Image (cartoon, rainbow, N blue to C red; front, top):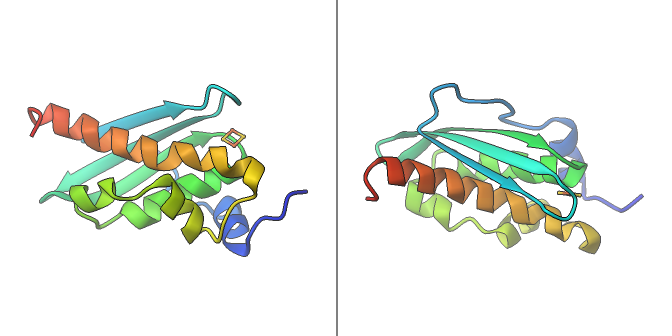
Length: 126
Ligand code: FES
């Protein structure tokens, strides 16, 4: 088995913010064409801040840990700050990912950014 950091194992076994926001202000869905895994982020925005962030991930353990970490990093941030979260910074926060699992981290920040873009486009492209 690949060696996962304790943080990865923790977020995989106890993922934070799992679920759906029924009346989400923005939604972002990303799929990985290589493995077929899917990740969807839902956001609730108030005063330009991410008041709530939830996700649903159909994917491997690393993808679940990544989604959980992204949701924790993003909550409470302004939209601009959340746009600065990168796939690399998520992997770093998780204490690293095995090289053959780095592609799994590519979904996380991208799905979050897509949800923010979705929200912004609904606001009239502001
Ligand atoms: Fe597909 Fe990890 S194997 S996201």
